[in-house]
Image (cartoon, rainbow, N blue to C red; front, side, top):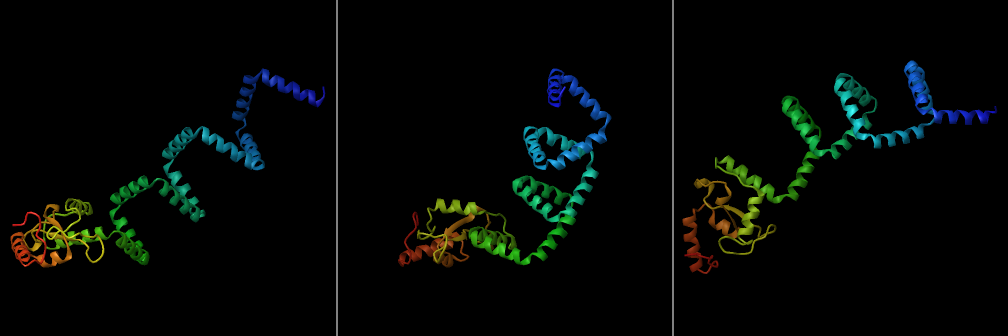
Length: 263
């Protein structure tokens, strides 16, 4: 029997005895684990690209099963996993940081929730870490704040108003959404003279407390109105009754147009 005939004979025999061949292979692997691992290592070294392609296809076809097995193994060997991760991070710090950044970007909400949980469980360490980071990145923080202030002028003004109200002991607070609701309700006009208001520029809207904070007024949205700069400066800290009298005098003097419903 020639070599070619022997190969053909073996191939036909294996096809006819497929289950028997598989059982023999399983028995051999069980009896020779070291030889099997050595054989696999040699094949993978000699066929690196083929091995990678095989792994990619196997992972794509069995992703959920593979991930479940990985999670089970990690849960059963937490200390071993931590030690492995620590050594791997020390050996490849840049790669580890890049992967961590990619994971945070891909899982933003999960990342934030993990941070919140860790900070709640470690408040002192979280405070110290934040203080160190702020001290080391002061210029970056200032630049971020400048950009945020420039992009969110209404939120900045709202924050200042709320802080001022707290400083004088006035109850209540309001948001930028509350101011937008006032703008819509007043149709973008001054509550006193009905001049068209603007969100920026010289004629920018002023948020006025109808009952001034110093006169016992609150900082809730129902005590707010939008005025033009001229009317807001004229009103000052006047109560609504005093402001109504001044408006009436101004109407008589033709200083401003009478507001709708004015006496």
